[in-house]
Length: 314
Image 1: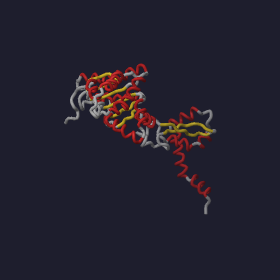
Image 2: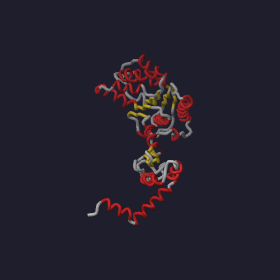
Image 3: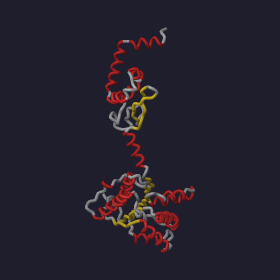
Image 4: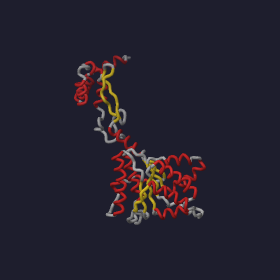
């Protein structure tokens, strides 16, 4: 039986193999990146080093660079998906090191941006809204609302600090109040500002459940400390004295004291909301407690009335 070493020598010396090897070598040496590297390090590289490093040069030359041979990270053809090789010299031989490719960097950036927005019970389409896609249809109140949102962003862009006040956007059902907040949250995410957006009726129901699983304080702390807080459909829920005073009151008191911007959407004006907050679930009239909560809301937000057609009507 022929020894393995003899077999390999015979195969390597075969005319067809030698011809293919030389073709591959020439293809490698024609690669622009390889040529540039060999020129840059010509004082350190000789023919023997090139021959001994031909496998690494092949790995480099056949890879995708700057994603020129693939359209996204999933379709990456490289040995390590999402990474591209660079030529280096280690211990007198040519080697490769891998760095993140543009598609991977872009995917990571988008993932980081998406993590800047935490939503609780918010609709998916609302959280995907963009300011430039909001239909203005020549409505002055809509123009004012969008302009106010952009003004908020402009202050942050100019100063690097968030304004102390958010917006209280109120008006009829289905006119796009929530979409403006969702679009603003995404704009803030692009600026690496973390936003917590909450659908208030479901959130308050969740708070009642949290008493049983002992996560109430943790959730309230998470919400009240948000860099930017957005409370959607505020005033739509049947308010109990406990949710008004111990949950919303606690959250808004902290944000007022710390001067953290808070945004609201509501079907109710300030005056209508105060009346709503005055009467608890049991029908008890508590004007002082309602006024106290309204004072916090007025302190952390500026009212913007929004009008328009109901987009939910078909």
